[in-house]
Length: 273
Image (tube, rainbow, N blue to C red; front, side):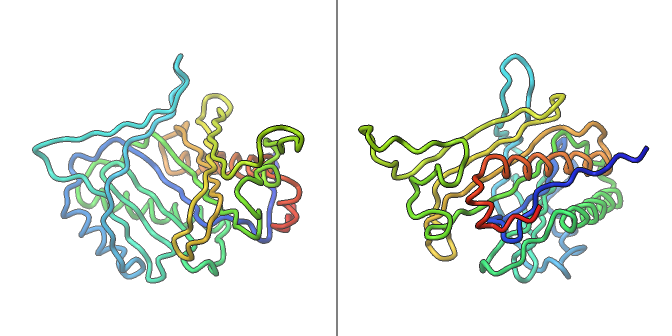
């Protein structure tokens, strides 16, 4: 019997401004600074722009007694400097990020007019670029990456004068937040930030939901940024296993986003499914 695919909620005009698919793997000791340039030669026709960033710290989801996520920084002396390279397309909407223990692809809005690429189009892009990266490592006699964590992230911006009039109107956006009774002492909050964490089934990872006020870079507009990140370890350390985990992370993010936000917001974003 063929298992039917779950139908996920969809919106015609979702507030998403960035999507991320990435893997973390055991540090590639043989990957040296010249390899960043050699790899760029492979992709520069599509990603002609380069930007150097500090490396991301390793991040793991643990399910021991402490039941916590872990991020830690490793600094080594005497070796080559650690760095992360962004390889960006001409419009800077699509990018590949690589460092000695990470491979990430991003889509992001730059002008605000870009069309959001749906997951069914974004997932094959990761698959294609990941296979090319692994082939590059093989040709350079570098060990195949041993993946230890996968990550799916969606970043959303709720805008002033669209989703809210002031940042204290969290109850209009989120079902998990109630408005303070008017007869009580406290006025409406000026701003709200929160971080919720949910365990995925069978300890496959966690969903992190973080909301915080931001000033958007491109137009200096106040926004409430909602970031949903799923992180965990795939069952099988193959490309197929990674993609299966991405499907799980994507499902959790879409369902959770819909469940956490209000019906009023769903109407605003024109929910279709």
